[in-house]
Amino acid sequence: MQSVKEQYEAYPYPERDPEEEKTRLITGSPSLPQEIDHFLFGGARDWSEPLRILVAGGGTGDGLIQLATLLSRYGKPFEATYLDLSEASRRVAEARAAVRGLEGIRFLTASLMEAPGLGPFDYIDCCGVLHHLPEPEAGFAALRAALAPGGGMGFMVYAPYGRSGVYPLQAAFGTLLGHLPPGERVAAARRVLARLPAGHPFKANPNLNDHESGDAGFYDLLLHSQDRAYEVPALLEVLEATGWALSGFTVPALYDPSRLAGDLAGDLAGGLDEGEAMALAERLLGTIRTHTGYAVPKEAARRPATGRNRALVPHLKGVQAAQLARAVALGRGINVGSDGLSEALELPRAAAPLLAGVDGRRSLAQIAAQAGADPVGFGALWAKVEARLAPWGMLLYSSVLR
Ligand SMILES: C[S@@+](CC[C@H](N)C(=O)[O-])C[C@H]1O[C@@H](n2cnc3c(N)ncnc32)[C@H](O)[C@@H]1O
Image (cartoon, rainbow, N blue to C red):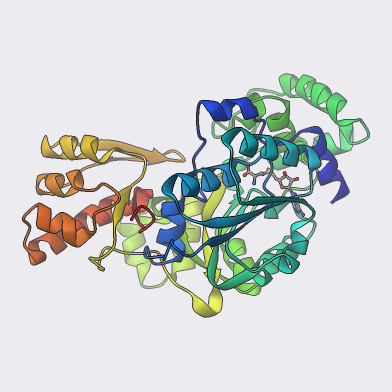
């Protein structure tokens, strides 16, 4: 753990300038409030109750700042605990929170193994951290022990195939440069990298660009002293072994083998359980670098929200409702994609007025009434909208703006 701490003291990651909080908010998964609600609380959390948040391995603050900023903006109460081994990272996260005038956050410098003594928490963010622990399984278990009943976790862990070429290089640089101080290691590794042949699996991998984003990114990708990746089966296994169950991945399309294998996957479907099907998709696609998703206690396992409940409030992610409604009304598809997988997404023209009604505040029932849709027709149409958008993580249900 000491060498990991040293790395993040020398190179807080990701590199962030607190002054930039004045001009932009970095958003992403996990930890968008709408996503938390959708994956962990059936889309119907009571947001008048304070959300007790733990950001475990909070780094320079991306997840914390996003969540605290949006909940403050929405006027929803929360208490957040930021936890990280690195004091240098904490200083950046604190400065970002100060620039934004965020309140209700306690900053702690400690290991996430201490989390059970600090909780309980309704929501835990652990993004890009567990795969750096000496015993990741103990980390998953510690976070599970820190969870309040009914709560859940948003996580990101590395995936092996999209990171092809990284691990032999990390090992080689460890042998070659491990004795040097961090700054010298980066300079020397850059020189060696430049000499590697064009066909080297790392150089040939177009999915990775962190090493081009400055020294902290370079170190994190190629010089890490402790880094492992999880294939889907290994991830499901560690979740199960530590009392968690997967609610869902944020982009389910990546884990659907029929996207690449078509009918061949369908023919197999009866013979594969959900985990095996997701593993097959990961192996076929070969480009997944990270698994991002949400987990719940296995004894209270639940799945993401669906529009079968007409009281839920839909949100669109990654596209403006008006823009999508216009394209759909004109019969135009929109291009969507992730990790090299893409689709020209088409929706029935009749769905345009429904999409135009999505504002994050109206429920499905209200949207249907406003569009003058009869309940049966609405149900069939919305099922098509959900079937096209949800696989790309573009349709979420949440009461957070109500
Ligand atoms: C790759 S960074 C990710 C930071 C942040 N979660 C994000 O997504 O931007 C990993 C962070 O985990 C922290 N970390 C590693 N092991 C830890 C542990 N056992 N307890 C707490 N933090 C840890 C590191 O100090 C570092 O700041």
